[in-house]
Length: 397
Image (cartoon, rainbow, N blue to C red; front, side, top):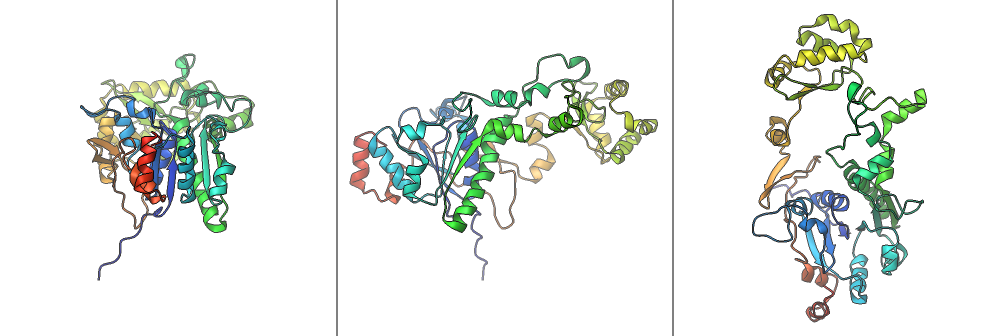
């Protein structure tokens, strides 16, 4: 007798996602991949701006690669919340939902007549998550912002850049959207799941206030430690983990590629020194902040092409790896073994960055077209065929 399939971890959880662009949709993407029924609710006009941000498959409209990648495994509904029948429809959906996620500025949902208190009256166990740049209160609560602003305000951008002679250049913009993805997505996921656990245990809903700038600040740890210890921060690129130590840095190779060199611990430093044929450098472990040592390593790595260094360190477990392009990373044996990229919806997408025993990730639904599942979702909320037709006539959906 075959063993029954294990349900997805979030099977039976329903999420109403009113968010747009990157942070909220990535948060709900993780929930959808884990089996939650995520209903992406867009307005009847432009919808999620991500639909038209960047290129997409040839011959398609309103379906960028960006939108497709972060909205898979979701169902699509269009709803005009500025009209009373649209708000009434949302309240009916809320009655059967577990989580509502939105990313409007503070006060928008209240002005629509859809405050947390109003929604809670329809569903006392609802988890309401609001993702904003600066939170629901404070002097900056209503300010507009983007990822660059959040990492700038939280003291991260000021410390991001080159060391030594490069420390006086402008801060470097990270290629990863730290505020959007760490703050707006992963922080929201952890908070929503905690609130959902509480709701399942007590029947009480929660308002989850996620500020992307708060999340960046709360994870800006090593500069805080330096400030506590010394009262001042090191110059940009001068801390142990930002390039100020020779045993944690990026070095250019003979062919103008790079190696990430991070033998921080003494045991790894010893293995590194032996591997590069410089055993005498072991004695300088306590002095890795010396600029002279960095210059020696710069000369060393510039003497051979990246492939030579990769081959050398492939058999030495001392935290030295090549700096790969994304194309190279996608083909790397480690990511291939972990099945971290999948082909779906005409493009390469990432698999979830976690595994849970008994659960197997699958893309069950490509990103929805605008309102693709409107009729089915409204029918599940108790609307008749005639009522749905009336809503279409009124352009509510």
